[in-house]
Length: 394
Image (cartoon, rainbow, N blue to C red):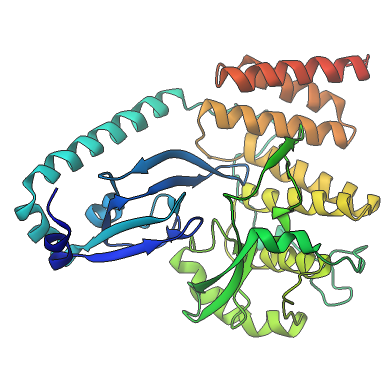
């Protein structure tokens, strides 16, 4: 590796503190980063809406080369797991860097070969459930199929109330302020970002909800641009198809006329609900697949559980079930065996919650048949037996 001074001649030093992101999945990029000190996590969004760390990288390793070489959006998010120093090299200086550091060419080619082999191995495990004969195989939710109530602001579903709960003081420990550029209007804004390194996982429910000690990440998963009101999960905020930009820009005025939101420093649950519903509204502007809406309604179900609104929780559960069902059986979505297991397990839990024991049985039995993650497979079998004991008829 060249000396720091030589690297600085052709690149730019980038410092990130713990929990800060170098970039997000879906963002455009034309730079490669070489880690000089520290450690980063490579995070990807899963089909059931969670961001998971797939690997970690340390000093001497690099990331971002795929976007630089292919001129495609970032395929993963990169977060600093500890204070990290890296050198960034853009496409204009990349040839100079390779000429001065020919050994890096071999390292990059080797890394590409390894990643292609991993992708090939994963592709071999891809399996899509066969839809039943009565199901249409479109897998696309059109704007006409998704329609919110015209009651009140026109944004919330019928039955939604005001709940008047404020975030506890303990949340502040897990948050920091981050500046973000909106991919729709290109204006910058600040938002609250969670410090994942501080969050301590307490337990995970059968429906995959994660519970943390003294913190609720559901309150901070959504980012909203205060200029155009574009709203989405922070893990997917930059993942906007170019065709949606024009539509969302044109809908911005109408959206602002439906609701006014000004997030307080100490967030309220009513603001949180508004963010999720605005996110749903934005999602309906394009041609989203069922999984897009499923992730919103699942989290709305959890939030309505928290405020003990049984009626809205049941409604959200039914909608989450319907969209996940379409995602699993009617969608052209390619998923690994482990992700398919997770989806079927979640579908089974939602079916159970909706009183659809036949579908719960089918989903869990389908998940059990898949030879995916051994630990997850054991968890699925144990849960299935637990359900059978509670519901003898199953």
